[in-house]
Length: 486
Ligand code: NAP
Image 1 (cartoon, rainbow, N blue to C red):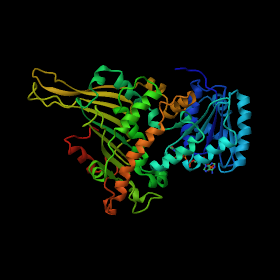
Image 2 (spheres, rainbow, N blue to C red):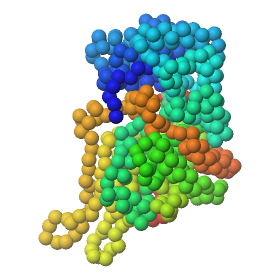
Image 3 (tube, rainbow, N blue to C red):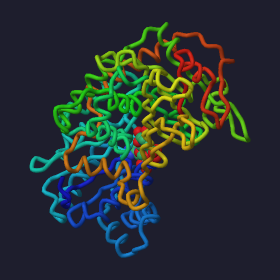
């Protein structure tokens, strides 16, 4: 792993937007503070608003205000930013963009390396990529990489069309599809825990694992994203990408090496092994929900830009089946939703209970390995031990590891890590097209079954705010003799 300074020109489409201001500029600043970006970088932010460079610098400084009390450093960082007012549908603007890009390339010594960050609606991706090519913004002497955001399509067909548009300009190795969960420290830790410990490596299969549980719960409602959310729902917004990526990391076979190629191959195999459900199976194995009003909080149907009879799901729970040798028969329970009890991302691997032979009068619990991704990154293991005292009883204890404050300060934020990966050309933590194609096919079967089902308007809302979702989500596990650990 090299810690050297990166040389590149960033062209951020959607430079005035929320993502750019909340995530991209702070992440670039952290890379700058850590020395990955120094003298040889420049950023062109583009959008339609007629901002000046001076105003853009103020916006940049505002977006990094929490990260720096060193004014000189903040000014120096901001001086690398240039604003170009640009409508992505207007060819003439790409000519101006090319001239500015070439000028900055020379000024900062960027060797023709360009990273195009498409921080705007996917409906513009096709026209942007086409213009980058026809207007010769793509350089011949350096690398040209494109970073795209979710949502990557609405279903398999639209994702394929989007991928074709991007793929007609950028080869797969230069397309970096962001799934920011893959940039999280503890999600990356899944492979270290699985393949770095003989104990877990030996037990990571259906002989020892009873079930796996993945929870991505959010405390907030839809906030100002309701317009988008109405067309997406929890299934497309969270399951197709983040949850399925976590499922593959938990159930894939060991890769030949820790390389993007080998890991992706095994992730694709895991996705291929995921059972695609028919309508009856969807009904049996999936639960959807929508939050009602409670504790002074609005019901989803009362949020701005949401239809009063909206049937959009704000909660999904499901039982997935990975049909490979090691995981056949192990239920993978997933759960995500808005306005739940707390914001958390957590994985529980529940091991099979020991037969009650030796300690007949004791109540042995299942061993559980918990990977806490957010908000407090850490790992804990629940084990049965002897209860202190004269008698012989057992009790369940937790052995925990959580990141120290120093480690947390060192820990790069997901976007910071992923941007550096893209600069280095490391594709490991990005979703490949093949992965997306299998995940969309899996998802489409659920969506279709739900769309075909004539669910009554009264079926929603079916869970109160600040809870862990509808009762049916608990029943999904109870049917199997299991329960949510979290
Ligand atoms: P946003 O705040 O609405 O920003 C959209 C950007 O696109 C603005 O800079 C807008 O600037 C620009 N724009 C719109 N039409 C344009 C045109 N014809 N020509 C040039 N620029 C145009 O959206 P966002 O929240 O930043 O999200 C951007 C993308 O990232 C979306 O696809 C979103 O789904 C995805 N995403 C966002 C987040 C997040 O946290 N925000 C998280 C994950 C994924 P002007 O109005 O000045 O033109």
